[in-house]
Length: 225
Picture 1 (cartoon, rainbow, N blue to C red):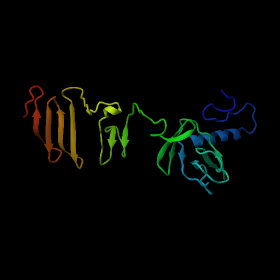
Picture 2 (cartoon, helix red, strand yellow; picture 1 turned 90 degrees about the vertical axis):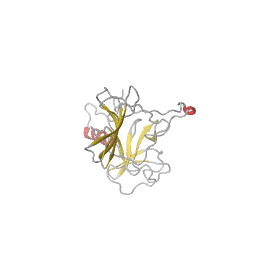
Picture 3 (spheres, one colour; picture 1 turned 135 degrees about the vertical axis):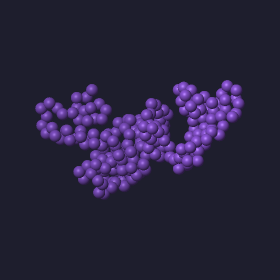
Picture 4 (cartoon, helix red, strand yellow; picture 1 turned 180 degrees about the horizontal axis):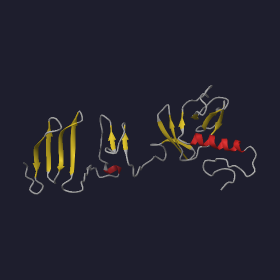
């Protein structure tokens, strides 16, 4: 462990009896300001901006030009500070939102890669409590998707699968509900599943309030009613 700076973020430590402690403290706060909830203006701008906002961050692309940008390696994290530019050391694992391209980058092995791609892509997200795709999930609908089309396809045998595709839905007990609810204008129009018992049922509604049974299939005999 270094006595001068923190091991991972390189935040400078205050020394005992040090003069002008505020200089060291401000340096640490400035670096922390860049590495906390990191938001980068762009990672494709090659020309050093003439009048950037104070605190603006950029990831340098290849061929960057300018008095402070030119000659620096691609991937450098640059911060506009008090009319100049400083390089902010970026540790592996740092996440950065790129504002102009609306993507999330992650620092890996000293380089930047999109969070979902790259040489070492993210292959598992475990124990998520909510997931929203183009919309916001909530406590009732913990998985929510707002889209026009969706595709599920079987994993082929040549890719390590068996070519089958099966959806499994499970309810706790016979008196519970396991169903597919079809809506129009957010009003229920049809429901298919195990609704209140273990027989397969289809019921329909014209207004989402009054329901009519269309058919049921007895689970023991297979008889259709």
